[in-house]
Length: 112
Length: 112
Image (cartoon, each protein chain N blue to C red):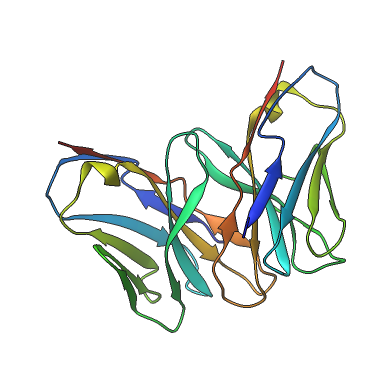
């Protein structure tokens, strides 16, 4: 049981380049989330998808787009990367209701 | 807007001590609260989940309590060990739209 899988684990981008971070879960969870983690600022919610077919903005959505491809997969796209987007990105998922959240191992992104 | 605060930001104690980590939230309308552990450069490992209807949960040397009326949760670690050194994060589901919000964490160092 893999849980939540994120790819890639590491990435270096040049300013202005685009890329998509992939997230997949195999627990049949309905809700999926994208966070960024910066030193001293904790986990900040970028976007979330409460269920397949829906997406909503979180606290820091600017510069990002998401796609809930199907129930398993939730991708995060940076259209034009900026140095301010250098961070560690985490994907998480939960089942409907008040259940336990599971996190992926993270993607360390550096924009130069 | 719901906010989750963790105090202290860092804590260093000798091995064997019992200790308490604090988590506070601004809005008592919380659905559940979860405690995670994060090791350097790694993902997040779930420790305990408390539903809003519960007062506490226990797992081994860990005990987490929830007091919605005061907007507080505490994580009690008994007989601390060097292997407990990590960053501990709290947070959870804070609204009916399934947003999950997290604190910035407490970095714990247990000295041998």
